[in-house]
Amino acid sequence: MVVIVDYGAGNLRSVVNAINKLGYQPSITSNPAEVLNARAVILPGVGAAADTVESLRALGMVDPIRQVIAEGRPFFGVCIGLQVLFTGTEEGGWHECLGIIPGRVRKLPVGLKVPQMGWNQVKQKVSHPIFSGIPDGANFYFVHSYYVEPDDKSLVAGETEYGIPICSVVAKGNLVATQFHPEKSGELGLKMYSNFMKMVLTGEQV
Amino acid sequence: MLTKRIIPCLDVTDGRVVKGTSFTELRDAGDPVELAAFYYKEGADELVFLDIGATPEGRNIMVDVVERVSEQVFIPLTVGGGLRSIDDMRRMLKAGADKITINTAAVLNPELISEGAKRFGSQCIVVAIDARREAQALQEKTDDVPKWEVLTHGGREPTGIDAIQWAKEAVELGAGELLLTSWDADGHQTGYDLELTRITSEAVTVPVIASGGAGNLEHLCQALVSGKADAVLAASIFHYRTYSIRQAKDYLAERGIAVRR
View 1 (cartoon, rainbow over the protein chains, first blue to last red):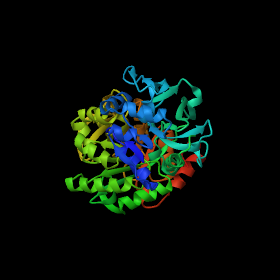
View 2 (cartoon, helix red, strand yellow):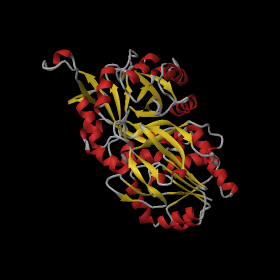
View 3 (cartoon, rainbow over the protein chains, first blue to last red):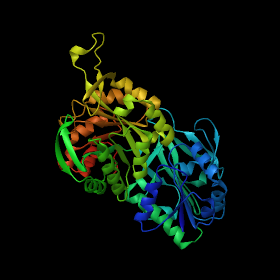
């Protein structure tokens, strides 16, 4: 039912553990056909965006992911799984990403500790079922050196302050992606995955 | 605003949590999986597991501990102790660790830092530094700035390496975070080495976790404010229930430090 994309990301297991904890049995796959047929897809990620894009290309995952999102099936991107959706990233020089969300991935401002590592507040900018039961300004666990900047500001569903306001949640219909790691964000992180699974189960277009 | 982190540290040997003084005189402090679940419920921001036995059998036990903890504890887990290769790191990450900490192996083979950062990302690589303050008499007379020496092998081996220089080098090689332990203060519960913590934190661009010496909540506060640490690690004060994580966070919040509650 729910497919977690396995392209060698280090934190795959944490995501699987979180979904299991909620009582669901996700399928873990590196097979593009399985992603194409999935009811919903989770794209986890840590490390560098360009490497992740390379891995996804090598597996033939790019078109299936594009199609799942285009058809409005529930999709959850985590951290690098958010960044790769954008046009491109500044990380390690300019690298093209999947180009599903117009915008760029930029380096965090200088003068602050990079990576941003730890718990920071997410200010909810829109009403979306992914935030159901989660207080505005709740803390989530971040670890990243780059941040996303969507061209269309209405995509910014959650915002977090780190020297500058950064986009920490993108949500548009059934497409949800977070800069933080819900699987490492305690009970409220699990609540966010639980909200996503409810979106999957009700099957309604948000 | 990014909050300051409170990180209980679980030193594990033969599948039990232990705690010592200046790296020796170990006391039993409980079952690692149970303690981890307890700290998670109490509101710990992360957990660090160190295999202080660092034997091959100990590593197998640690893999099992990490697997069991990661199924029920949904905060970041850092694991270290005796990890010497990319394969050792991969095994812990696969078991459910989020970050790997390396100490002696990084000093002996600094390429392990760059290689690990390349394979798994810098955010995964925590370089642990055990630093011992050099006696005043040993210091060069040309300046008054104190110096610290890097120790390896669980604090047993002096290396002649300057700890601050090593901290900078480790970050250049790709460390995403530093776990800085004062050998002098560790286990004595008389406070962190604030000077060591501050100088290191100011010298690098990555987060620094202060470790060694926490005996009361004011010590945590000092490490975060005067020491400019991004996170504080403590063992005894939490293991022996002197303070709860919640008490620690309340104490810090009352003093204007941003914490997650």
